[in-house]
Image 1 (cartoon, chains in turn brown, purple):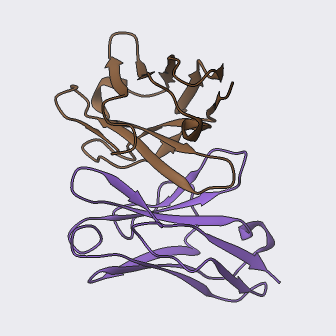
Image 2 (image 1 turned 120 degrees about the vertical axis):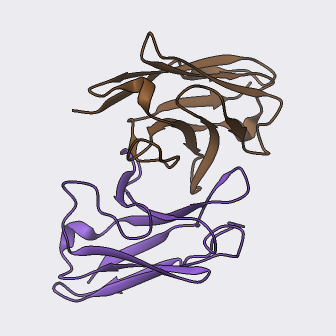
Length: 120
Length: 108
């Protein structure tokens, strides 16, 4: 069974940093492209970042470019999102998502999410 | 303002067939696959259609997807009360994923 478990969320002051993790199990993690997405309170879904299976391709939403860094460790079956210079508008539930099939870049299976609250 | 345009709401009665539209442009839907998600706030989004019309295992064949030009549609036949939730479309657009604003489906 595909399992994605996010962690690392919490309350952080504006300008602060946070590192989110996503532990994957139940599939061959190194074979799948991965994404981070988020949902702010009362808003719709928003894509944050993409990383290919070998980390050779990485893309970011304009809203986080230069502040967030996506990475993965295939040996540890883990995906990460390093977030810096956090702003109030980054407050959201953050989800990691695996592609639906190998070779696809889409958001298929999603974790339950971790809440990040940026507030003083 | 979302890059992909969805109607904010849709409704139908049990057993009915409803469709939800998703309108984009040549840079997203026009040249890339469309994905559809079922999303109950507080829960994990669930993929129901990928690559325009493919259903993941476990998704009932009551759900179907189609694409034509720069628009896509999600059809739900044999509407059931448990289908009442939010639906989002998504597509790749020039090195980023873009979503629709979501459609709230009400089963009357």
